[in-house]
Image (cartoon, rainbow over all chains, first blue to last red; front, side, top):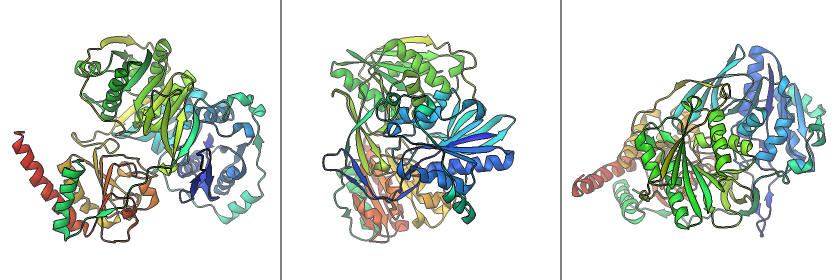
Length: 260
Length: 332
């Protein structure tokens, strides 16, 4: 079983983010972590390999701290990694990012692709389905259970209306949701190995991509400005004992806010 | 005039609320005189539903194919993209439901066009069209624009008000998708059926959520009762889901669902940032917590410092009294 995992290093959810005065860029505190849902994807890949054997390759795109997700993956026990590292890859939308990632996947040598249902920085949730489309593979989104047998997968996915169980032939793309598994904590020996590991890199040229097709230049949508969300005014506390406060709360919600 | 293609999603014999919202926004767009609204419905649908949709739109296309009888992202993306190519719309609009977010990114690849998922505001008349999309769990908003056509825009449920139909009688055209054999490989084995009348979390107008303060799984019954009285849904925090008190599908927050109801009642929730990220765009937030220093009060519109086991049942009783009275008065 040849498994590809797409993963991303993102700012820690607790990291402070400041918007520049002109709204052109963000100043993000240098605290990073593996995107939450990608951890479930990595763990599931390891579990599939434990059951069925095979090889796991993890691919990410970015510069600087981006490589850390690959070291985390090595520490967890994956076989190969690849870093798409070039100025031209950066600041892409879902489309440009998915195009680059899909080109880095050798379709003939891939039985399944796993990734998180969305990266918790851009919160787009587009790349998984887009990679599937670029590769001409089916996909199952937001999975919470995965069974592989006879070159087929039975996956349970979480929809708005509840759970769905679908069967899909491999190769296929799966996007991981919380509930799929409990990601392992890497062993110290794994961490040591990861620190020493050489990280293979690929440029757009290596993937047969022109700079105009990827990153910001290849994007179909553009971020024009960053804005701060509207701040809520200070909380209004409703006084009185439980009974009185409850009656007053109902009055406010029905007569003032009119939300009931 | 530019064309707007609205994807309409159904649930059983009803139009999904998120779709009614974008259809309503469509009628407002039509009133500007700059856009013609066409609604697209995929797969089997009752005639009643098609008629309702036609009252919102200038035209309705009902796309059918044996491969669209059950939902697959592959089939839906192909059918919608094929049709969009024949119409060259400026905008493809849909509610950001799980289904739309699942298949429309594939359609964007097929059409080599831009997409913005989970949008919370839109300026349709600007050139280029600009939408607002939260990132970093809502800590930052981005203004996103798209020069090319079509621009696929998925709006977060509860972004637009639902209006009554524009009394249009849009022309309904049935169209066969003629999807190539083998283009859909997936097979639905089982679909969980939610009890009828149960409100979906993502599109609920009111949500009553519980945290660790509920103390035990069975205590969620008091939240269920309150939610039942106001026609809302019950949500939960991550720790409650991890403790298996509630199902994963009920989780609100960064690793669960993002919701934006008119009313969000947070009972016994401390207010960890992970939870706030999933509900911060709610219109009115009422927090009930014993701890006056709980972080949740920093994000709430109204707060009650008190015991939820006293406050919630008292609210339920008061609501029953008042709602019961108003129902009688209006003869319903």
